[in-house]
Amino acid sequence: MHMNHPTIFDIIILLLTGATAAYAIFRFLKRWSWEKKVYVWYYVMGFLVLLVSGVLLIFMGYDILGTPFVLTVASLIPLGISMGIAEQYYPQWKKGLKWFATIGFLAIAISTFAGIDLLRKISVPLFHCVAGLVIFLGPFFANKYGQGKKAARGFWWVGVGGALIGIGGIALAFLTVGKSLLGIFTADLVFNILSPLLLLMTIAFTWGFVKDIVN
Image (cartoon, rainbow, N blue to C red; front, side):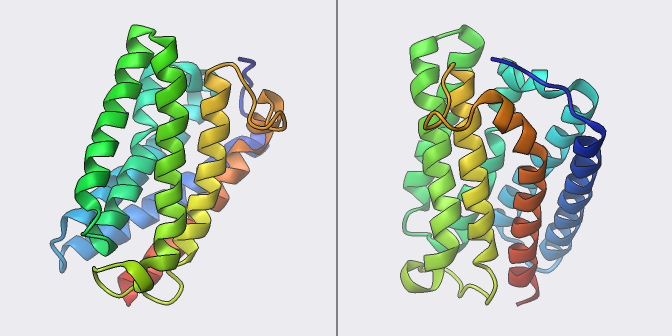
């Protein structure tokens, strides 16, 4: 898989992404001070890994995306946010999603570290696809099908972030198994749009979650 190092533009964008993620973490921790709910920590986990990933990309370049450790840890971003949404808005489905997320995460970890290509080619795209769909569709249908708290107006922005993380995550997942998504998202294209995509995703997530927090 062809790799690139971040340009000055990429570094600026990644710094803005990190600052936005740090702000979201601050707001979640403030929320924990008055709302002791486990989904707060799912969200914190997702944004914390996003923050650390951005810092690693700045200092180590995009080469790290192909390493087993980063490929595994980066899965905690969609895992944390999707489990948080299920815990907060879809308690009727949270148990099933937790089992899927746990098995999927373990499958990614085992396949990447042990070099089991067939398992990796199945688990990585499947995990990112399902988690991305939860993050994308969950906020839009929270008030219609959810059995948790009522979603705030503007929470749908989290779904926009979910669409972006789904596209980026699946495209990267296909690249890690030596293929391009739909023949369009080649390595060069993915790495050219990766940092702006991360920033737009983080802004959308933060905007939607802040709307929910102040509701």
